[in-house]
View 1 (tube, helix red, strand yellow):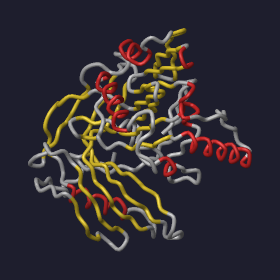
View 2 (tube, rainbow, N blue to C red):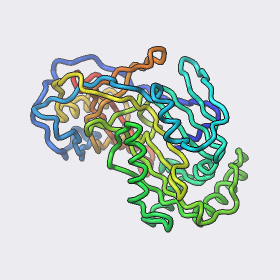
View 3 (tube, helix red, strand yellow):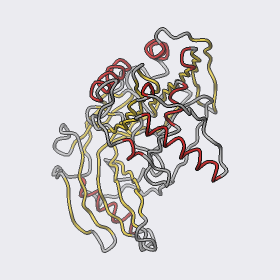
View 4 (tube, rainbow, N blue to C red):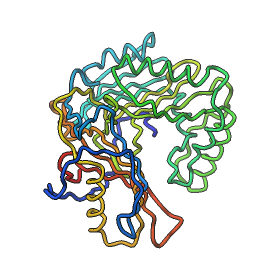
Length: 358
């Protein structure tokens, strides 16, 4: 997940998933197991973990709404926290379509801070070099995330202490995140080798050559953390989710000098609005069976996980607001019938009350 912003640029690749209406055949249930292994059809296999908060009792879960200040409302506090003693050389508001961005240009480390309703992106020049040598999406040939996971700690600070420091900053921002954290241990010698590979690949493919740091030292060692926003143990899904989008909407680069990059995408503060009765994971499986039954394909579908989440929908940039709905997120591994060794993950979302496809 790379969100180094110098010029506002939003590229949304949205995979449309067809909807279906509310169906009375799906009854609600209070019996929520922790998982299931079965076969729905010859093509649909289930070996799934069911995830939902412990406070989701008797088939009921939280219905939420936006509460408190958005990132846009707290822009001055955010700037003070991240910039600190840095010299802000310029600040202005830029419009991109219907969305407004507050932009700060900072002399120290040639950093940029960009804030909108639900997005925060802070990055220094150093962060751009780091992002150029990490390719964390395993679906692509240039994936190298595994190269940065052989070690646990770097000389300048243990990983746990670094994450503790990052967590304190997130707490001050009022952003709750999951304890399920991915960490890439960015050691300078590996980054140097990966930079050479990236440049060679760009030259071979005749694409833009990334800006090279060339000389890498121990001073460049850093941790690259990735996780996702939560509310009372519910994952909170950004407005744009699905294939092609990483579920981890929070990323941080942390080195001996502190935070070099902080990206928070699709975040809104939430509060309890009501308790609602939701359909059970078993009913979600029936809806999945119907969903895939309408697709003419010989592919094999393996349901791996069904999670109860809060999803941001109906964003209104003019009013700096959005609506939140409870959803079941289904993670499915799709195995191509023509290419047995080729597979990809698909995410399908059902409204947790109505089973309508989101």
